[in-house]
Length: 106
Image (cartoon, rainbow, N blue to C red):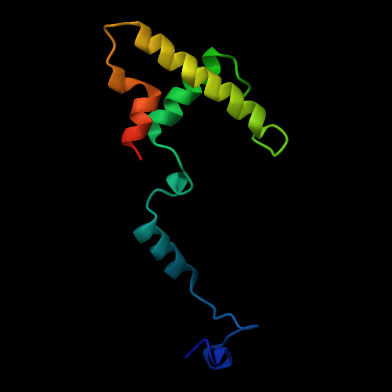
């Protein structure tokens, strides 16, 4: 009903005011970890990529439309080099390569 006649619910320009505490309660209930809300990668991947980027001295500049493909390309090369080095040691478990672990998270 408030969508049809917002003025009957103290609406302002079609919007209904909501108590601030109601928003906080919803955030706490449905998004208890707001810092992870926009995360698109598993934690193990973020840690590993950070280590690889530091090891290969890949600049960690904020991504922009101008540099995203350069950084992506260098990061992909580093991932492939990491996996090849990992697999070259017969004592390492092949299921622990970045490629194999990423397949498990899909």
